[in-house]
Length: 368
Image (cartoon, rainbow, N blue to C red; front, side):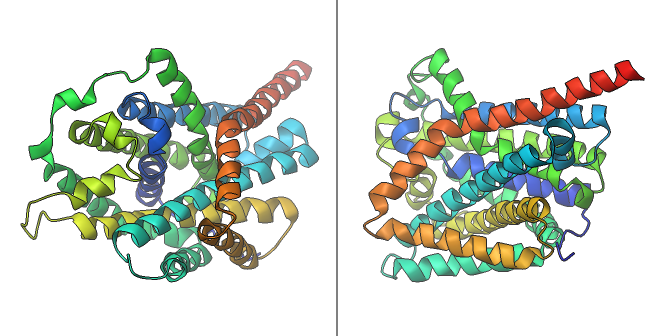
């Protein structure tokens, strides 16, 4: 089989998990919704990552109890191969949806803030090709890339925030808890659908990360970094802009860097910052595409992942290019429906697989 899985260690997998979760948390916030009644994203985004992490721990607990090495093996044991196939294909689709949202967001950012006079299609293709190449190279290459760029990306992210400290003001965070604790809790759980697939994917790819123990260690450390970075990012944005202004900004972090007045070459991170984010974004998108392709191949019996990845990228590119066609309204309507219901679907799949798996294990022990 040509699955291009390879082997990576704890450092590579930790960097990969941290980058994927951070990019997903920072770049998928929908301003018009998130800042409509106040700014609580510095609480809801980290909380959503934590909810996803708790789901990961539940899956890991069930896998350890049943003695299986991957999540799809757990699903096969728990619900049978046919239903497992349905569940895993839904997971594959959710990974592709995350990739699509990030592709759409980065294509729009690059086109709107950098290559303003360029054609949108050319800008989008400029992003698609690196993602396609990195996905085709496989999981080991993704891990190595994440390790190489991980520390540099973190340092440059933080430098961009430090350069904005002169404009901070605490009063801009008010009302401190947005539209109330209840809505913060609901938003945190609802938006965890973005992170649950990212947490389950390492359990699917665990044989390429030297087993479940390495996966657990990597995900714990990577999650801590992602929670801290997403908290800092959203707090910096909140200290710089009031929520009434944020609700009308497509991407506040980009606007923040563009508005910096510091001309020092070391600290100036406006347009350079966008490309720094783009590197992290390409790694995250390629991770989602590869994981989706791996799951699809495993459950359909496809022996070569490369044609699958190419097909997925053609589908994603077609959907992203639809942003500038008459299908714009339909596309965003579908996105809204998926975002509203994905958490319930993902939670039902995870709970069904883990709880049935644990029940079967209990029955097996009673027979013994």
